[in-house]
Length: 288
Image (cartoon, helix red, strand yellow):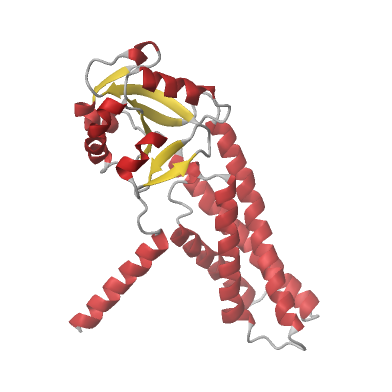
């Protein structure tokens, strides 16, 4: 489902970029330049290359890393940023050398380009994100979630999460820490001990983990985090564990109960891409 959503999102963005550039090109030709619009080579070249450029920008933003976890505010931020940056690049690369009667035409062209790109991209994205969130909130369609902990505290967390109207977690089972806490047996399947955590994660397609430990078990938290490290899984802990992992966590309550989410994105994707490019370029220069 995630791969299908990602492919659909990419196709939608590409189609929106084509529509945006087409409308801008037609308006610029007929209104700003006062000419009849006739599809020509620059037009077809634009609707081919400009959307590819925006897709590259979206990829560097990390838009397609996990589209199921997109929410409306994040979508708005990413779309606004990409529309402004992309429009500025297009303005200086393709529009600034146009023959115009006054500089007002430049301002008008940039405003029309930015408006087209923002509206044509934002509205379909918001509609898709709203639909995805609605589906996630349906019972059984949420993120496949594993609970770590089997005590009364874990039971209280489970009830709090389940009571949220905006809950997007579908619990598939739990593992306990000391081997004796089985309070959740009546609520969900028991999948084993934390010593078997890697095996459980590999065999149950877990998407999210909620760690609800008793204060006496906090010394085991780092060992549990180490076991999870090699899996692409969202990890959430209770707020009172924050001091134990200070600097590695971020607050999150987008979909319901307040948790602290383990932040693995030490470096944004665009910075990773720039760093990788510089590493390769400098290596080539050093070897030449």
